[in-house]
Length: 493
Ligand code: UN1
Image (tube, rainbow, N blue to C red):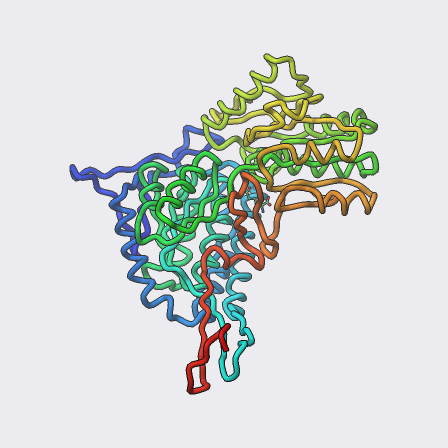
């Protein structure tokens, strides 16, 4: 089946200058002989069309009352609820994570739809007392116009929804380029909006690749804000381009997240937290746990439990009922994991379990992998691998542990397992991340919470979801009325 771009409320194809149709294949990572469909390999001309339509739509959409804009989002939420199972199954076919997780992905989109739609009635500004008599000052939040969004494959609907829903409620229009590995899920989102009755041009989807479709979107002069979630390398390229053009940007990049297990921890609970954090979504979350930082006193006991639990995980096609861990997204991802493991083994690092590919149905499977006695400066403890690989690092004192937790370039998520309340508060205060968890895993943020990082995870610390969800997609306009009938001079009178 050939899937088209969604531009100006209609489905359109990419036709090359020579009159040829240009598409790319999207395959099932659990069985690469199965093709999901062909998608448009778009270029800058498709982006131009989409931006034009978004720019035209903005002229009227910005003046539709926010509660009315929100009504369409409520409808979209209902359609997502109705179609949740079908979208979840399609998403597992497209990107591999297990059905329980793809259901969660759609649920996250439903949650943010209701959350953002509700906020449509609460898009408040503020009034500020003037220094002068008979003078009034107030502010409102206003939309920018066309927002360009480039979204990743690991949360194919949730992340586009986090970005697009608040933007649309706030009165912006959107051109979204999904990752080339998950165009189907975002085309589905366009179908949902279409059915919900979103006016044409408000939400547009252009599929394709970063250099040929993503970059033209970033550079387009009519695109006022760029919102990107993905790799640090691409994020820095985008930041550079946006700075050159004086364009606002919101970035959600890599992570090197940790779970600390103290001597006061409930070890069984901590094992479950690490399993979920490290091997959920096959380790392919920017919030994934890739470091376990363990008190030397409980290291042996905890490690034995963790390895046994890891070896009980069932790897396979995420559509099957009893599967715990699906495949990696593509061959490049598999090669990357393998490269890190091979080089760790070559330098003598201690492998406890995993460390190899799994041959099954020509899918991209890799065994959940744990290394132990890793030093904090090791590549396994510093670089984002984005796969099912965990490094265990031991510590003796609280201060040493905090230095290890904070000793990477990233700052997204960190968790601590402890029954010591003082220790937990010290940890929350001192951890250099945007997300801190106590006695739960380092993944699983909810839509009511502000999501994002500091340091190189989010170079300007932008946030998605939560009470800050409008910050990237609105600006504040301050408006002043002087009803004194004379010229009053601020700071002078
Ligand atoms: C991501 O990995 O890019 O906190 C987002 C979580 C999810 C979102 C992760 N709700 O794990």
